[in-house]
Length: 499
Image 1 (cartoon, rainbow, N blue to C red):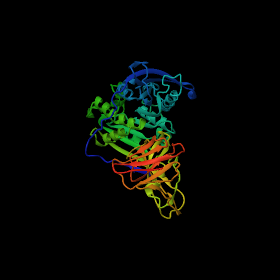
Image 2: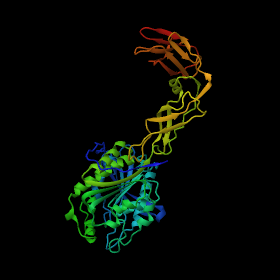
Image 3: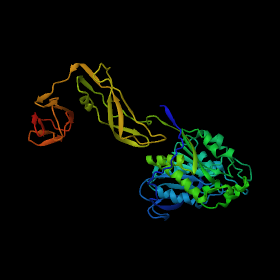
Image 4: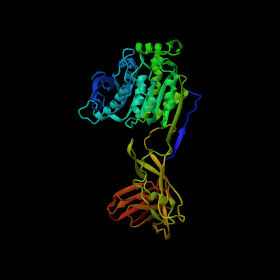
C-alpha cells in the first residue's frame, strides 16, 4: 500500500470550529498504588482524575467508557496540583487521567531515575487497560482501548521511554521534553533516550515546545525531539512567547529554580502569561485527543485549523496516511459473482448485484455499508470472472477513521453472449421476468408517472408489496412464500395485471 505525505501550509485566515468539548462531567479523584510484579513489586502511587457524576474524592465514575491519558511530571514536580489546569479540563471532557507521583527527587540532594519513571508510565498504561476487564476494579467497563501517554520535561522524556517498542498505546504528547542526561547535581541518574528509546517509537506523536526555554537547551530537546522521531505522523507546535515552567499551572519553585541554574530565569522575555500558555496548551491538545482517542473527525479539523492559523503558535507537520484504503478492510465479504444473458439491460444487471457489504477493521469493528457499483466491460466480450475492488478517500491528515457509509465498487459482470435475454411475460404495458421467479422479479413499463403504483397480491387478494415504479427495475421477492401472485400496475390512465 502506498503512502501519501501531507505537508500543511499556513492559512491566511483564522477560524475555529466550535467543538462539543466543553465540560460534560464533574471531576472525580482517587489515589491508587499500583504494584509492578516485574520490577521487584515496585509500588507506583498514582493520582487518578476521572469523569464523575458528582465531583470529589472517590466520587462515583460517570457511565460510559473513556480513553485514558497517563501523565509524567517534571523534575521535583510530582504534586499533581502543579498541573491543575489539565485536571480541570481533561476529565471534564471525558478522559481518565493517571498521574504517578514516583521519582520526585530534587537535585542536588537526589535525582530521579529516568528509565524507572518511563517504565512506570508504560506499566500504568497497561494496568488501566487491564482494569477495564477486571470486575473487581473501580474502572471495570469504563476504559476504551485507545490511550495516550503525555509528559512535561522529565515526564516528556519518560513518555519517550514508555513509548519505545510499545504497541499498546495510540499516541504520545511531549511538553518541553528534556532529552539530556545532565551531570550532578542537576539530574545525575539519567538515561540515553536518544539511542535507547526514540528509534523504536512507532505511534503518532505531538511535540509541544515554547519559544523561551531556559531549562532544556536547544540541542538537548525542543525541536530536536521532533527531528529525531521517525514515525509515520508527527506534529511540532511551538507556543510563542511562553516558557518551560509555564507548562505548569502554578509557580513551581523547583522548576523556576532549575531554570535559573540552567541558564538564567528568562521570564523577562516572556510575552504571554502563565494562564495564556495553559490555555494555549489546552487549545492544542483537546482537539488532538478528541480525534486521536475518540475518532471525532471534526476535532481533527479544529486541531489543524488552530495550529495552521493561530497567531499563538507556529508548527511543522509531517504525516503519511493510508491512500486510499484502510488496512484490514474486507470488501469481499458478502460480494457474489453474477452471470447475465447477453442483451440484459445494464440497470437490470446491476440491480442483481448485492447492494450492501460488511467491512471491518480492528479499531472500528464491523459495519454494513452501501455499495455504489460501476460496471466495466458490460455486454461486451468480457473474460469470465469477477473483479470487486473498494476504495474510499481519507481526508488530509487523518490518522485513523471509521469505514464510510458508502463504498465505491468496480465490478466485471460475466455476460453470456450465447444466451439471449429471456422473454418477459407481458400484458399490454407491463412486462415481468422471470416467470416463475424465485428471488428477484424484474419488470418493464411502457409509461410511468408520479401517480404510478406497482403492487403484488396473493390469490386471496391481499397486497403483499407496493412500490412506486421506474420504467424498469427489480423487486426483491425472496421472502415471499411459494405460490401464485398477481402483479398489478395502475395510474390515472391504466390498470394492468400479470399473473
